[in-house]
Image 1 (tube, rainbow, N blue to C red):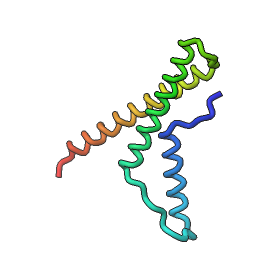
Image 2: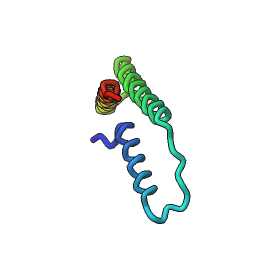
Image 3: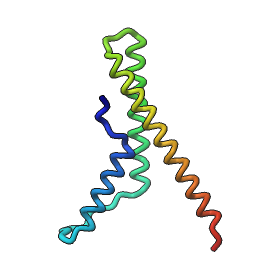
Image 4: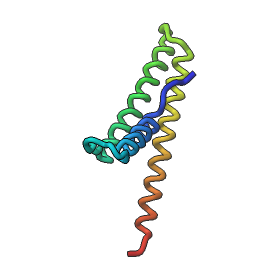
Length: 105
């Protein structure tokens, strides 16, 4: 059973909760805003960490170390899903940029 959430889903959930908290009537102090570049950097770092973890498990299994096959497969699938999500995010961002560039001023 996979209990983890991809970094992209986690950040979207955090941003949604921040928006909900910010829009409430009784918000005491404004929250500090995160830059898009910071979010992107953190997401890429999380993607890299999941890839490295998958590689470590795979190498340990190949070397015959005591590693549970389930853990190896779960780490591999998490890395794969995270990479696929990052690729789709990149594709959508490029698509949006191209659409903006086609707009007439």
